[in-house]
Image (cartoon, rainbow, N blue to C red; front, side, top):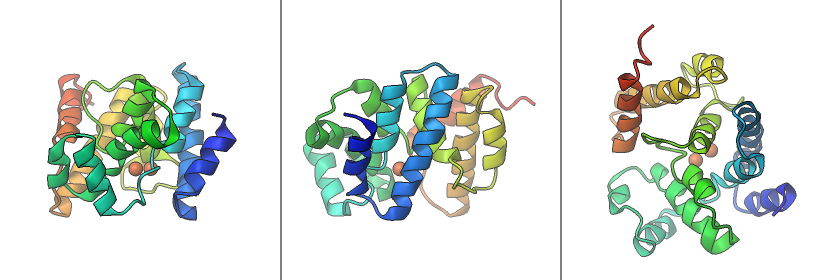
Length: 190
Ligand SMILES: [Fe+2]
Ligand SMILES: [Fe+2]
């Protein structure tokens, strides 16, 4: 599947603003993939499809989580976390792309996790730093991402945890594990 075909499939699923976000994630992810010498074609597809399921309604996402035997604890957390794991499944069942590396990057793009692959990290952080983002702290993450992508992912996880706590929202355990993993590498020592 080429870039145009993939983009067209996603364009039909998303409102224009989210589609434009997807294009920016793709461009950011490809720059990072080139820098870190990853498979550009795979990174491109993962970026294009990462938000494929984001505008399916909650009932449909819930049905996929149950029927595809995704972790049922997802249902105890905010539905914002559901679209990554479901899109990873939809990629296989609706689009016909079965590639564990691409699917993993899509799966984990919202929460992150510990022991992410380089491709997981690129999609996770491209989604966080694409030029349309303006979260507090995002500029600092942009400044380190080409030198130390692990540190960038840790900073993104930390910022997300702080934000969610400030809103009294629950935090998925894998995000904590990503944060703790970075602490273990002394990423906070500076
Ligand atoms: Fe997303
Ligand atoms: Fe996204």
